[in-house]
Image (cartoon, rainbow, N blue to C red; front, top):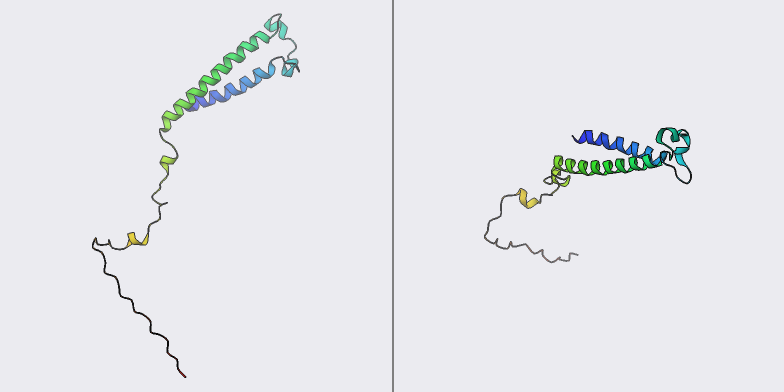
Length: 121
């Protein structure tokens, strides 16, 4: 469903661009290349028709964009962040690899104090 709507979105974008460029502006635009517009669209030329067509195509483009966003969101139902496996990203500490620590406090270890250096001659 979304692939058909995506293709329709591209077609609407291209047709809407062409219709906007065909409209008469102060610099005439691409409308100058269609010299016999008066005979096809009436005495006023294509101005009224192209304006209405631009409105209809723009409205269809906006509706299709909203529908695409809705259907795409329904298909995915999650984000990319939800798909990331974070178990490999958390570093393990050396304590976790050893045997579990008992709950009783450990007695302090006695460390040997080094003897003072003696002078020899």
